[in-house]
Length: 469
Ligand code: AMP
Ligand code: SF4
Image 1 (tube, rainbow, N blue to C red):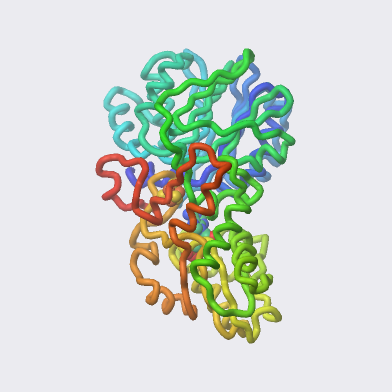
Image 2 (cartoon, rainbow, N blue to C red):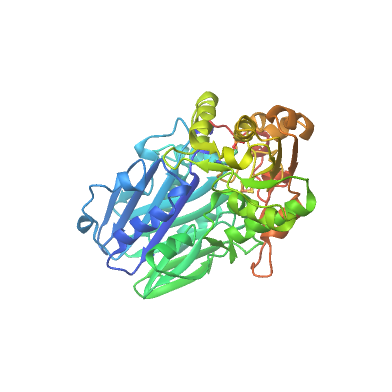
């Protein structure tokens, strides 16, 4: 059970809109823009002021809403969710938003992150008489709010949020209100935008662009916002601490056109490439990047080194993410299906292959072999982030320590294992430099999976390896 709870809600995307007559359709488009954050399930809940209506399903946003008559999801506000799932929790019950009905009213919840003390809280709730319907940590918040008072009490929500330990970006919808909350360290991204008179909230700003909304500001760490027909009110449920926004959002997860805490993702990746070229130069003929997430860093590396950037690898757009394949064998096959080398570019060349990160090492090993089979004379692997040596407890599926290649092998051993001519990582200083700019507000980044310094801890939690079923 512990594994189940802790394996949930990873890499999800949340969206909310208040004050627009086409709330459900706009949420659908917003979820489209957030699709890269989760492909296992999607859902929308709307309110018309009296009643919450839910539509959710398993699969991609397009599939889930293929036959939906949006006039049946009418309302002036909506929240939505796209979900990434690990094996073992792929049930419709866990697809969000979760909808709770009670005599005191209804509430829908969409969450991105991980509640580290969910297991403990579930136990306490069950001992006090609650019956939980899902294996999701998100459900805990609903029960805590209800236990603390009526669904309408702001104090009950604040008190419930204070009991949570971990990383969370929450959107709650009730008949006549929408609440938005971010954890006290701001580990997960969450921004506010405007569309005419309507307010929009999303995990990434790319969801604003798709609907023509403009960016307004970040949700602050420890902030609780309430949207009603009277406008928006902000309050704190916790003191604002220095933000610890997930560095992996910049490295890999977020879309390059999104701005996180005022920093554009593509621009930060390019700076990672520039720093990497300064730190780990090597003589070569071409620089290439693993599509799509490493292209920006490869452009930066090429620019800094003066070595031309070339498209040495092509992505087949019609296969899923290799990472979500359940077994190692399938994952390896997945990499082959996903990428092809451009022989005319790499044949006889010394190639610098930029990847954004190495987790298990499967991708790099396959790609190095692919490039060499296509005639590359040398393949130098340059990774645009520091080595991932620790699990993530904040909602990113980062594998167990045993599976993390960098946690178990030295650089020389890894180089041999993946068959490269050389391997080098970006330093944590280089990564921080690429992310934290003068534009970032209250910035600090979490790099715990690379440095082992965790911004939020829960007793006993760090000893337990992150279980992916
Ligand atoms: P691996 O084969 O396990 O080393 O996978 C590394 C690749 O997966 C990198 O090239 C990243 O683009 C991508 N990646 C890194 N972290 C994650 C994650 N937590 N979930 C999904 N994909 C990831
Ligand atoms: Fe992101 Fe790594 Fe921190 Fe997890 S541990 S929140 S993946 S930087």
